[in-house]
Amino acid sequence: MEYQTLYNKLVENLYYPIETKKLNELEKMMKENKRFFVLGSGRTGYVCEFFSSVFNDNKPFSSFVIGDRYKIESLKDGLLIAASGSGKTPYVISRLQTINKKVNVVSLTANETSPISSLSNKIITIKDKRQRKKKYNIDGDIQKHLPLTLLGTSFELKLMTTLMALNDYYFRHSQNIKKGYKYLVDSLKSNLDERKISELTELLIKKRNNRIFITGHYQCGIVSNYIINRWKNLGFKLTNPRSAESPRMKKEDLVLIISGSGQEYLNGEKGFEHYYYKYIYDICKKRNVEKALITSNTESSLALNSNLVVPIKGRDYLKRILPKKSTDYLFEMKTMLLEAVITHKIAEKLNITESQMKENHSDFV
Image (cartoon, rainbow, N blue to C red):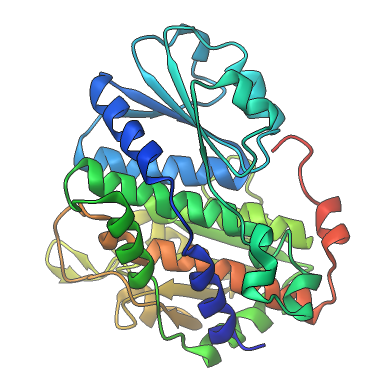
């Protein structure tokens, strides 16, 4: 099955009956609270972090991500949005068990009867495509690699789309959550450059026994960590160069940068906008490390200095204003969908099964 077909199936899977009434209640609860918090773990945690970052672009300092260094037991006068596909994530449950009773908890999950429900004031169910297999007639090829590859990430992608639709409704970029969600899914449709994506897939397979560095800036940085979390299930050696434990780059390694705009300008002149990218590319040049880029701007400085460029439409890189609407983040969202497609193709090409991926999956997220 080709990349475009897989991508289309993934977008199709995002269409599902939203619990509009409950989401409207959630929107009302958000407005009634002075601040709100988000909690998740693993890829779900990165989706929550992405949403919080986007929300703060509209209204600074109103959303906080719960992490190990944030005392959840001291929270009060706020709303906590917790997310867990299984509803059994140990980290999320352990954090909720210490919560102050003054904090309202709304949980988004695919399993409304799971342990997370007893720790929440309200449950919003995000349906999974596996619960509707007969309607969608999933073929054996996809079924073989279902839970941890292509459709296994459907909860995270639906969670992301739901939260982004809620963001638009909250700030009145859309008049209706359900219509806003559908418009956002429609906007995620894309014509892929299959040749370039295939080249990236083969390059990743080629480098699977070496180190692969994946990074980005702002929201693209969150997407980078999301991808690292997923591809570790494939047995790849992955790290973010920003990480404190990041090893030294070597000639046989690969650097993959996620950047919608390609960071084209600095003080009105062509060049690297961020010293961070310039430093990475200087190291790559010095040590002859291959560089790959996923971007909307194939003429940017990052693109012109990369060995492989994979185009994904979605970022208006000529705009120098802070994004506001969810559609301003289509590049990041499409890249997360593309990750699922590439994961499926790698699993297929290397005959990596669900059980093998599960052996590399964390016990705690």
